[in-house]
Image (cartoon, rainbow, N blue to C red; front, top):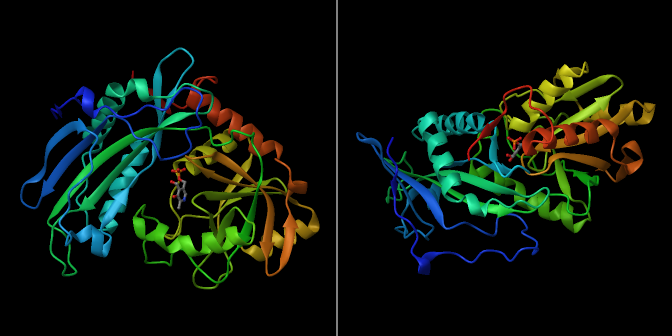
Length: 357
Ligand SMILES: Cc1ncc(COP(=O)(O)O)c(C=O)c1O
């Protein structure tokens, strides 16, 4: 695939954050973006890198009405030796294609998408921040672009990738979060979109998230949509429970996003000799383990925070402390190890990191 390159003119260059200013998350984007079009009968065509720019869309564009869209989220890491690396990026594009199949969106060629990502990151190398814990966030997105407001599968699509520097997730240190367990709302039902990374799942989560925040909690813990009995995810992360000598994470039943960090935690924990189970886990079991003193740790896993320890769970008016509200040793060890692999401080025995430039 030959990617056409139009470089930003000096007037099109974007303002860079002054060194030392907090980057936050997802607010700053670099000078360039990757784009590629699709038309039925023609396939994907015209791969190109252009100056970052707003889109002009017909008001009838399908994605704006029926949400036919899939996306991904991954990061490029600046190592101390000046090199830039990606972490398991192929898994992101494989997941993008699984999400695409569920949304009737044409798949992209994984090797070409990876090459587009590498070329964009290489071009934006100066945008990869180097302060500890920072990274270049990469957001691939596929949207349905046919303009026609009847509910149907679009015949046209746009695949684009934007990138921007993001700050350290834990600038004040690695601290546990308080979680509200919602029975009122659910995120996804079997047969729905839960295992796809698509905008509807995030729209479905906003009200529950807002209500939990109004009550002073950081995130929502989602239960299954049928019985409101089994644990599914926490916020936009997968979830792990360390009970006795078993590390348990909900099995992938179609309603849960198959996280790349989740997969990495399972691999690493098994290699460390831990018993790791992917199975259904009921809230009843979790609460019983808290009462019996066998619940050692709870933590979320995801690209944004890597590991986010849970300090408190609120359910039906009761609050339950996990590990006395402190970061547990397993969460800390996994966090240090995975961050170590991503930033090059720890030797990667798995071939998970890939040098870009
Ligand atoms: C709903 C949801 N679950 C889990 C995850 C964690 O997935 P990953 O580890 O691939 O970032 C994410 C983040 O992408 C998410 O949005």
